[in-house]
Image (cartoon, rainbow, N blue to C red; front, top):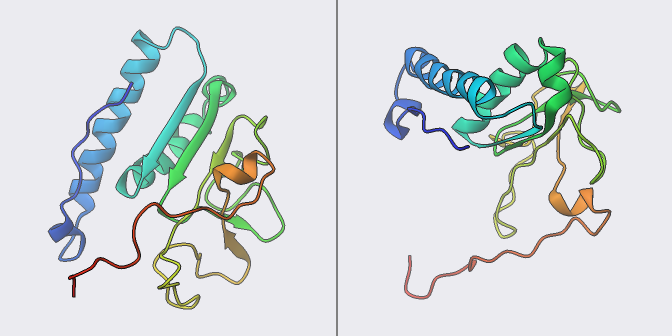
Length: 169
């Protein structure tokens, strides 16, 4: 089940107040989630997948709907929230962004969150100014769990996109 929701435009993201647009996006996703749970889920487990704005929408959904309803929390297999920062206190697996949803520890973990941000190896972020992958707080860290880590394998990944494009500036 992959609902469509109205996103904030890139122009709006960098140019103005997007609160009303973000509320509209969240209400679309919330309505779709509630409809799915009530009409199509039939009591099964569910996964949440989001990237960028979708991660923001689903983060709020986990906070406001799933963590506040234990029956839903028990059915959530995992939330894959990629491309925005999810925070946890240093040395902890839960807390920060979520009050009761832990970081996934291995392939058998359920009811947990996977999150990471990626950058080009040839252009790594400045740890003090990076937009993603940092919390801005000395007492928390950004969740960084990649799919390979869940399998207990080397977490380094191979890129499939070229680092240089011949003829490009």
